Image (cartoon, rainbow, N blue to C red; front, side):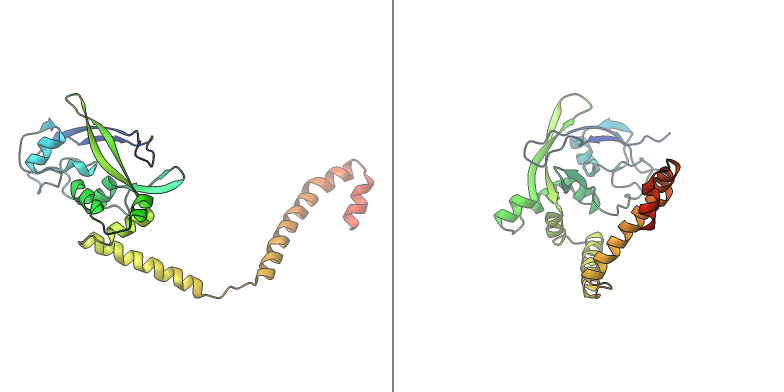
Amino acid sequence: GNPEFNIEHNRAHAVFSCHEHCYAQIMVGRAGPVSAGPGSMLTGISTPVRLTTYKVVESLGGEFIEFNIEAATMATVPTLAQPEIRIINGQAVTSSLAVADYFIKRHADVIRKIESLECSTLFRQRNFAFTSISINQPNGGTRKLPCYQITRDGFAFLAMGFTGKRAAQFKEAYINAFNQMEKQLSIPSVLSDAAHNASVLYSYISSIHQVWLQQLYPMLEKAESPLAVSLYDR
């Protein structure tokens, strides 16, 4: 049968700092386009199936660096709703690898774009953390791959500078999200603060009353406790 690209990318121990411990083991089954249709980004030119490393794949026109998991017969890049997001040290972040995958760009180009952003030093320090991952090569040894961990604000700043259909879709969605927030803020509150507090208090009292009726009162009544009468009458 047709080989599948097997990509293992374990970032479970990622730390949002320059001391990230992150490992990825990558085995790439290399194939050319199939007779059923054109090859995808990962298949590259028509060559015999082979196992190879990143440098060989790059020289043949393939782009496994996007870390897509894709069968050799797949002719389209999977559609992602958003870049991969992880919670690291209590903060939601994505990576330059995930951004490259989402916008269907070469990772090296995304790195160059990040490093050429005309933002302040403080903004860069807060939203882009340079790090690297160790890639175990199929033929032995490892190779360091530089990358960035990116915050939500950093991602928005970076994506606004991209072009292409997916970048346009992101920008439109981003604008729509702000419009929705403004719309919600413009809607007057149905309840005043006092009414809201009263509503919450009533909810709590109702819950306590249910516990009294279903559990406490039957228990006191069975024990013939005078509290059953005195408290119930209140």
